[in-house]
Amino acid sequence: MAQRILISSDWGDVEAELADNDAARSLACMLPLTIEMNDHLRQEKAGHLSSPLPEFGRQCAFASGMLGLWSFNHFVIYYRDGRVPSRGIVVLGQIRGDASIFDRPGSIIVRIERIG
Image (tube, rainbow, N blue to C red; front, side, top):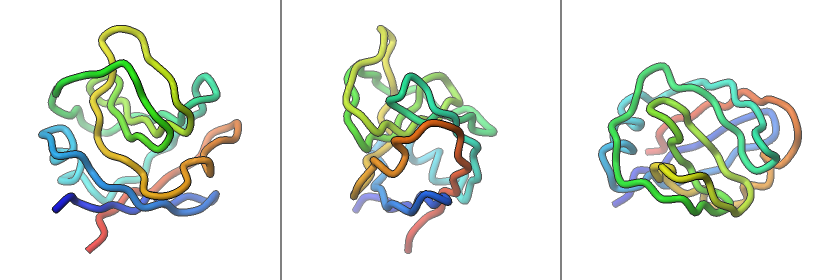
């Protein structure tokens, strides 16, 4: 069964399921986390983790609601569909619900914690 998490912010809360890979399991071990996230290219919120996550297979396509890892410690919440440059992202999980709560300019502080 996939590990479920809650992502909370002043803009609302969403639940997500973490992927079944070493990077996502390492992220789960770091929880709870509070991360300041900035808007990037009007497609994602991005912020830095306190520690790097292990590498895992990368992909270039992303979809709204995807949680990803850009560099070794760069956590991303995508709120639109698109593609990233070669090297790609590590998929960390998927929001179960409406990721559009993050579709607004500016920065936001999010809290990520395990559910159950």
